[in-house]
Length: 354
Image 1: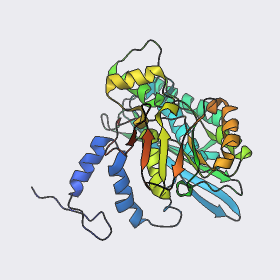
Image 2: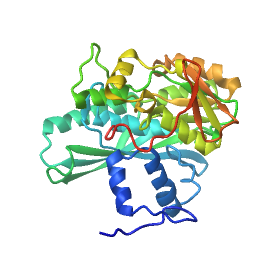
Image 3: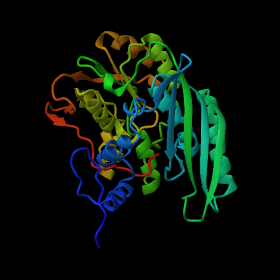
Image 4: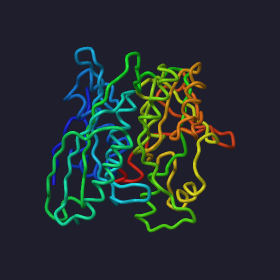
């Protein structure tokens, strides 16, 4: 059977059938190089405008002299309850964190629920309560929403979309394209906890110590960082695709190289062991309560101290630097002294992770 094709590029045709793109996208769970190509070559050109073009965690704009940030995200995590969290608090924290990565103070959220027929009221109530606790913790207010019900076996219990609005301070300019050679790369704490918490439930794995998701709001941490210095170039929460994908996106956006050091990247022993069992690289595993900060070298120690003084950044550490060499490429210096390219995966290691 022949397939229709579509030009997904500028200036040359793409021979891959659009049906194939659909199937591959679904198979890989919406992450990695394929999704990046779809965004850059299908969606972005059709809706091109100055607010969308940075492809940031949210759009930053001004209304009557007030700078605002707007972000939206959808959550389809499976299972909906996992060690350390639920789909409900994940949905709140995810949008709060996207706004925080723009440098905004999150204020208001909306929530839309797609509920599968047959979901128990007990499970739905548990999700709702977890969202309420998460909004209280983050200091945001849910002000509008929507519910839809789909047929049994068409929705996998529940999907949630959250959108949010936040206000920006003057003098804050955080953008993935702002990374500059000489900047320092800071990571707020241990990686890969969320992804491994999800996989431990899916695979029925048991560890001596339970691995819990790190899902948490980061807006308080970011506000403390900005009090220490407004001269922060980039913030990014390394969710799907982990720190490897986030750093690759930054390197490409800014046209710079990034060098990280393996020995400086905190990976808990139980997480490292689980990754070995599952055949996963912790650099690519999702996080839901960590951030990457790229700051000028002269501001780095001040920002790092502010992070370490906050509960969400007490384990913050410098993991690398931005370079002129190798633009668009992320390199990692290994513990044994070698250097390797840390590429963007063609797909996502773990689908349905958030």
